[in-house]
Length: 283
Ligand code: NDP
Image (cartoon, rainbow, N blue to C red; front, side):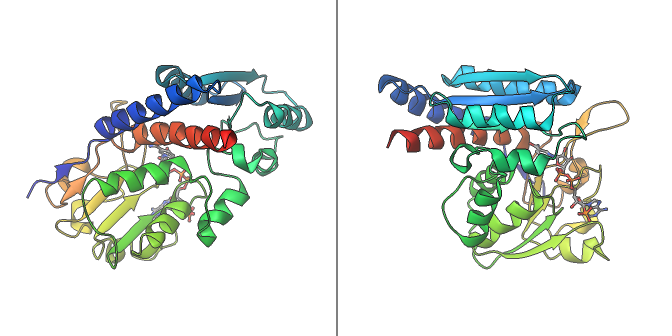
């Protein structure tokens, strides 16, 4: 059996279209939705991510502000900038691109973002809201993964979902979203004794590790939904995920490609969160 592809590009395009319509409606009411993206330092990967986010905003008719700061900016000065953006009525969403230079505490900076503008969903208030089933911003990558899983039509109730990775931005919120959808959830990580024992039982596997070929064909239950969050480079410098795609697609029922799976959905869900923030501000 060859797995069906879950097309993240197509889904993201549809979502961006919906966002553009909502943004137009807000502009019509005199409130253009606004996202501020804060970049500190000159990490090349961060610069590319930020460029994409700003471009996405422009394409969907959102107002965006890109604040670039020298790597030497003090934590206090950065916190003051976050505070100014919190107070700016034209800005509905604030994103501080990670990683930050070592002398700046990322938790303190994320903690300084007003929770109602934390469109990355990283603030403890939003993480706590997810944990306790209250409304709040969901972290964009797991939120996008849930949308990708939805397109398969699988009813998650009672299904076994395995999340490989337990980071605060992907693995943990992913597990909580699956739990909220009534899946039975297992979280695996670098200390998991036998990863394959768990993944082989999974109806849905989400892999967010950052290591090529973490999930191989013999680790997958036939027909399973496989979501590949990983972003790695192979020996030829080509972008690839954490899943041995060519082999796993012969076993799985559904699979996301890399590129063209989770990546575009992460970007799309940032726009959705920003629109939600802007609409909430107008109420
Ligand atoms: P982290 O490095 O923060 O977390 C990686 C997780 O993988 C950790 O929990 C770690 O366990 C676990 N892990 C490491 N080795 C193994 C192993 N051998 N077996 C099982 N688990 C293991 O990464 P992120 O969560 O931030 O990102 C994961 C990947 O997803 C990266 O490739 C990243 O680039 C990509 N990514 C992609 C996005 C997208 O939009 N497509 C967005 C965000 C991330 P432990 O906790 O024990 O160390």
